[in-house]
Length: 520
Image (cartoon, rainbow, N blue to C red; front, side):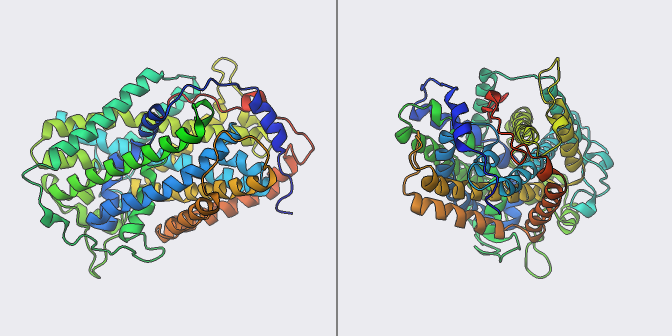
């Protein structure tokens, strides 16, 4: 029975009751927190990949992805406030739909977090290479600077060594328990927002800015066709990655004054701010250097992250590189229009801030796997805590090695698409879980209730499915293949070892969501 083995919600909530948090956050504080959580990875890294899919229509893509995020965020807020424990969507599904579906969500979250961390590692590598060349005239040999050309990397590429280095460095920091203070995070948020504000201020009024560069606005159309990954909707499916992180806002519902009013203001306010911010950044980039995709012989854009596109990009001189070919898109734009110094500063801002994103993604992945291990669904040795460091060092090391391997051999666009596939599935399951809990736990206290759930819930489900179907086919197929591998593992190993299946119902007090080393 698919809804068998449901983890008792009462036991989970009883543990959550032990965690009494002081309500201190107002709407403005929550909005600022959300802006800090969202602005980071995607806008620095994926502007080029999005432009290759949609051209100037990248601006519309940011709006589409932002709107779908808003409805998903409202669903996430209710359930996160109701069940404030570790495990995210995995735990929510376990408490509503049972172990099998919870396993598929946890398995998808592993894909989301680990592959997203790989994507950011590759993005960081692009900024590092650009800064080394600009400041020191040094370039890594092609063999060590990128993935193989056959996988959409660079000519002569074998391994992306800087990406491997940063992934393993952050893994080591997590293993030994290094944390970063809220003050450090506040500085990083300020750096990111200042860098993007400077970008907008320098590009939109620039003499290089021309509305002619927006024509044609939608070279691949609004809708490139299911599985193509093209058009404004295909780009939205990719740059959805730029919004992931808002769930940290929803988990703050328990610490918010008047959550019924302030949580939606914080969520929608921060997402709307970031959407407008992203659209202005896209407009500045396209309007100054152009953002038309490189077309194939059939008049259709070459796929982002493909060998064909990489070959075309290799034919351009470094100072004439199109936006869609750049590994450090925003810094590249400023250098092209005569603001090399500011472009370099923006590159430094991304170089400094992106490792914190890798850290929180790795932390999230190890936390989900840690809870799954302690439930008996993954080997219990993986949830061992180091006697000195007090961290789950085994699962952290395993995760770091997998992340480094993916970062070594795949380009950022492909990695982002794969990560989004897992994210969209998890968000869909959260919306379903919220609607189920409205029926099965109608009287359970909720700090925040999703308004018009009858509309918001189905919109979230439809929106996530729609974006999933607009990912490139190769990224779409990864999720069912990954899921099938996971189900084989579950029925051969996890089902017989599940604590719940063996009648062990434990809810640990330290299952509660811990403070992450840093929020980004």
